[in-house]
Image (cartoon, rainbow, N blue to C red; front, side):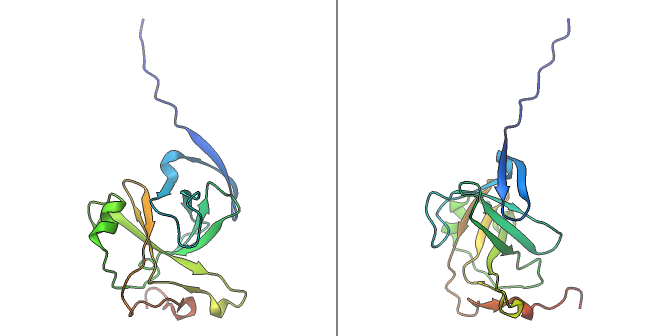
Length: 158
């Protein structure tokens, strides 16, 4: 008789996203915010970050309230090079060993006039790749714009 051990089943969760509709994800796909996003309830802790196409744009979907979702920009992938100095406490809060273990995003304010679509580079969202813990921080650097208009992005490769 041969006895084989079964792989433990991976728990899945179906969530409704604002852009893609229902998607099946695992707990490993979730991001947990250590503190609430600015202006939002502490009840919104679990989030899913996904893309609808390749590039620097992402979507942040609340798992706790399917009506809450945001567009994000990965500024470094968009060709921006904001000089971000991270507080060691913020890095420790999300369990990152170092800066290379952190993905950086900024919230995008979508506007019906595309020339007014903008992002806040002074209040980035930090996500630790290994722990999947996240935190939005406010940086004390006046050189980082609160309103960076995406129309000012330079095309990649030029």
